[in-house]
Image 1 (tube, rainbow, N blue to C red):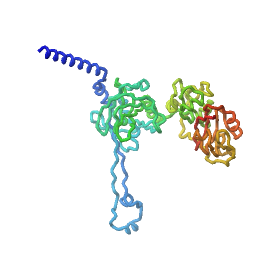
Image 2 (cartoon, rainbow, N blue to C red):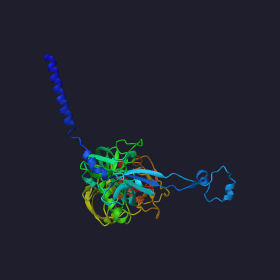
Image 3 (cartoon, helix red, strand yellow):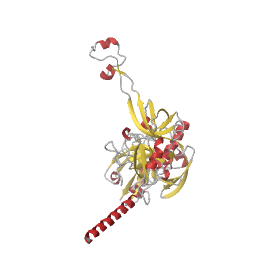
Image 4 (cartoon, rainbow, N blue to C red):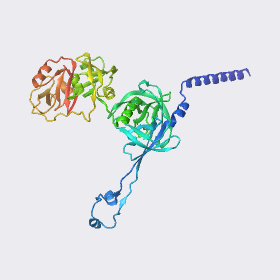
Length: 465
């Protein structure tokens, strides 16, 4: 009997401690119920229609032109269908959110791109036709307007204050399921994606799927900190990696679209590359960081300010440039005419350069001639055969590689046709310069060499024994 009471007492204590442990473990988990109730009314479902043009049966199915004379159509017989064949309209689905009581809505550009009709469905099931105020493909943002007043709006937060590990919530219409809520944490900030130079994406593990695009990302205060835009996937569905446009970037773009109908971005006028461990060593840096300038555009703000190839930009207006991809984000958010203070490392020494930012032109690509002159059959301690560039064949000064033998250069990846413009901080303008600089190179350490390959400049580390 005593044993039974002791066992019951032990079980009661165990149950109590388990309950306390469970309560403690879950005490810090957020409760999203109030957040969802307060913010959902300002989240909208967006559907679009793109009208398809009618095509004749002959042109659509048999490749015959619509304007083929009737006398020729007769020879094809009656087995061919006659008249126009209707084609179904295409539809797309996404999300968005209301930022002003008079009907301005933010969403992704890819949600509404090419749409002939845009329908916005509100939380109260009203459906309103929207007008596209403006769109910016570079940031994948679009501003819509519906004709309504006293609409519910979201509260905007500060995406710059967002911390990695912070809880965030997404509301949208994945696969057409309206007002679906998913939650997760911020996985990283300032992510760069291929072909997305001007958006420092917020990476999260919030479940985002087709239809979530353009929907809001909230912090725990119910403030919008991002716009859900992209996912990384190998299956077509959510795999734990999602990307959102920071709301600070989005609102800057939105205000420009509303006021000017287009977006202006700052322009420096440099071609840059990443600084890896080997390049950092060759430039005498203690760690790999910054954006390495490999080319300065003629007539650009960078040229006017005195930036040169080989400079490593490590700060812009006091903000660190950890990766080369950070530089377009920082410069792009500036306005033409703004002055930016750049902290650069040149020849191992840090200096500050003031640059008056320009407006990003339509294209700042620089092309070099691919013609290579005849080789001068003379090798050197790098294992290279080089020759002078004929006048007028290139915008770059340097020597062209006409043959590559075994040696340090081949180990570094130099190939025929490369134009060598700088070695160890010294500019190369002729074969004589090249030979002099190469002969004076220090042994047993890496030095940087600037090359231009198919119009693209880059630095490579070169180790000479």
